[in-house]
Image 1 (cartoon, chains in turn cyan, blue):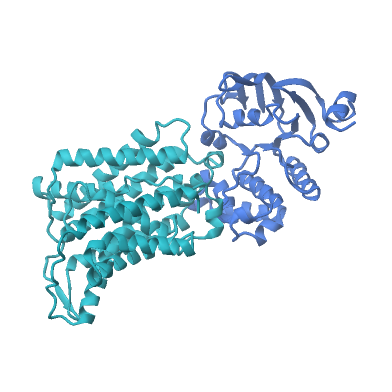
Image 2 (cartoon, chains in turn cyan, orange):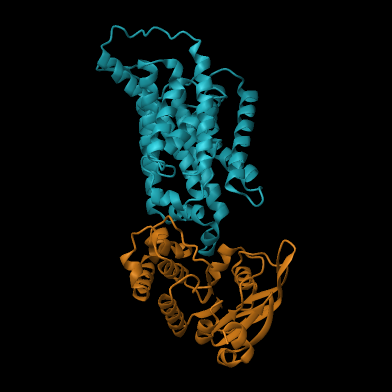
Length: 332
Length: 237
């Protein structure tokens, strides 16, 4: 894998360690689940981890869509998730739309933001190199975060769970119904996308654009349109992730960056560009994070998953499901 | 079929094509020979819409196509096999072939597409045995065949070939030139750009010699083959 990527990891890890050091000052709350058995507790961590992991996986899927079409890493992917959550709060709490109407309305609005991102930040760049475009997405993410802070302020917002908050207890673990929504949406998104990219000509045309934009236009593919479509799609998926996670973990303006880091980690862990890889990567990241925080120390929550990421890359640079054959051909 | 008049093109301020005028009559093979950097590829890119031109006209079936984007020009029936193959390296061979038919890839065209793929496999049997393989893992010659196959899927009436012999074993070059002849016999007009002047002149009806962006000589391919100056410069004496 190119040197550039490893430089990115280093930055990510340094940041993660700094963050966790800051958290270390806080006293870890004594676990209120002392009455529960050890297996029950581990089961609980697993369930929570899989739920959080599903969100990472959806972010990773978003990364992969844009990467597969443009070879750009869109660092504004986390902002789509944040916007999904906060715009949903707006539609639900301010406009007072019912959840079932607010959901598609939010997805459409965030998709529009994705389209604007392509039109305003990506397309105007002349003679773009992949790296310039990546930097443009970082700038866009800072801008979106700032705008969100002006609109919603710094407070976290809550949403009602889709089907109530009556938790189910299984093997001593408390499972909120919302967990099933999160995992369910992940499954739907991944199946739909796999069919789209593997079976439809538009899906294949999108991959062809990443491979060789000139050659793609020589067979009649409108490359600009495909790039636009990739941004729209991944914004929509980001919105779904944000909407479904908000009832569990709340949402505030600056959540995007950390989600992007974790989602990016998940995408790399699974193999950049691979959808099954994104799911596996996301679920592993989420589970490790949850188990590490629960069993070792919650202060290092953000570090665990990133350490595992580095270890995996050390042994298999193309990621768990990535193909070395393909990663050699790619430009980035 | 294709008439180019007074074509000028430049990269930034470096003029690459200077008042180039050529004609490609329907049903013929026209070749453009010239050394590295003579502007041959630029000419093809200008025709296929990958390159903006400064001045001049490109008439295809009496219609000016200057300023049209590449993806629209394909739809008119001009299909380019780009220099250095430029296949979709991380997609499978069959996906590459299918993408050639992108513009008419619809359910009700399925029959036509299967037929065309079948015909491609008849022309290049090796592609059938490799159909599931990732295209980037093919050898240079196989990639060239795949690039031609992909261009043929676009239902071209005019096929633009950019250096099909580049970096390929002589035996495969012969095979590819045989295919060009065969395609022409079945009605495809061909504009061929080549450094390998001997092969290009043998397969062509009419030829142009391009030097530093200017047409310096033209004539029936057979005559150019015997021309002492062409012999000296391009055929190695």
